[in-house]
Each structure stands twice: as structure tokens, then as C-alpha cells.
Length: 97
Image (cartoon, rainbow, N blue to C red; front, side):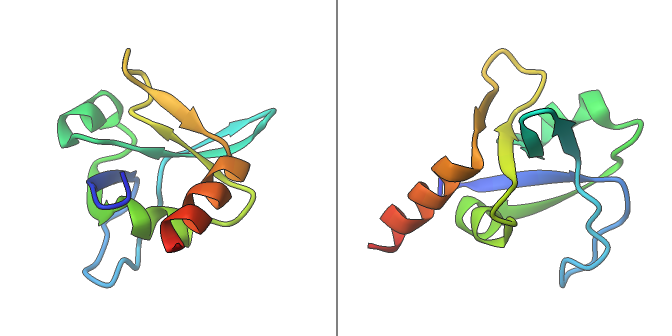
């Protein structure tokens, strides 16, 4: 996942330097979860509100996250899953080794 090319849906147009990114975030009782997609086609379900997308490596996405935010991979998909913030910290520390 760290080296994989992943996609973030954005409500606004994203520039080459990543400015303008307004990503899809789910605000849940268990914390905020950034939506991450493994395939651009999976974003189409949300295209009414999120008409733009940007591609980043998994490592770049995880390393940019605030420590209190987790991710949901492929939300709405039968193959979707969540990674909680404490697990992201663990992934980043193990990847750095």
C-alpha cells in the first residue's frame, strides 16, 4: 500500500502542488476518516459532490495525515476497509525501519 498509487476525491480542483485539495472526509463518532481509493472508477459513485481527484502514493497520503485522522479505503465498495489512526502510526513507523 505504501508504494501503491492511490486516489483522493476532491470537491475542488487540485493544482499540481496539491493546493486546492478539498478531500472527502467521513466524520464519524469514532473519528474522522479520509476517503482513499485504489481505482479512479470507484470515485464515480461520489462524483456529484467530488468531481476532481488527485493521485498520490500511499506513503505520501499517510505521512500527510493529521495524527487523529484515519482512512477508509474504497468506501461504499464490498472490498472497502478502514485503518484507524493508531494503526497508521504503526504502519508509518514500521515502514521507516
